Image (cartoon, rainbow, N blue to C red):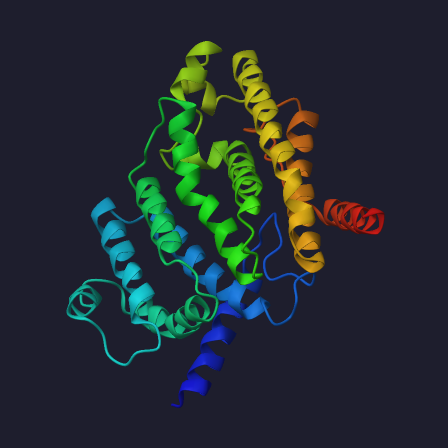
Length: 306
């Protein structure tokens, strides 16, 4: 198979995966330039698969960590023929379908990394965060949560800036704030799911401050202490969205539309958490079709006002 054909098939597989997964925020959406959608899909395919490997609840921890270690070799294999000794050894201990999928997406991923000169350390940071997820980590302080966000969310924004050719370092702090805010939104949205998986991103120091016990994360209806704790976390998260606003004038028009849609999507989830009285265990907030229309209208209205 020629290199061009391999790349075409690889990008096609990544696009198929991106379209198949529902997300609150756009993935390779119509707001993006068509030339970038395959590249964003390649990044998404790598991260989505790694996230799934970390969250595979039926697998023992050592199995999940071994699968993630193998997945890391996808970064290095790229379009080259053959494998390194380490990846060849690992491939004998992971599911054959994972080996096939790695070989399928690695040409697109490596081509994207090389074309846009993306720092591969961003992808390794993501994998480090996923390994932490797999271990069922709990957090003592909010600073520890932010440290996780620096590895799980911030690299995504830096990768997107590279894809759009934004080299203005003034964009980094607001991009980091937006990605951190979106990650926090996801934490509060998925508290019930994460509790079932043995994880909690609400720091212990905050639980103690509001007199909230671990059992409160499983109770329905939610306790007053839990709802007050969620009120605090949501208000703190809004600050990251406010700090992200300076990013919009620093990026191109098409990228600004996408970022605005993402900003509006995250804000909408926060509004829905507030609207349900912070009962996120019994009322997991999510983006509906009506919400999507609202987000698009707000995004376009903002574009016209610029």
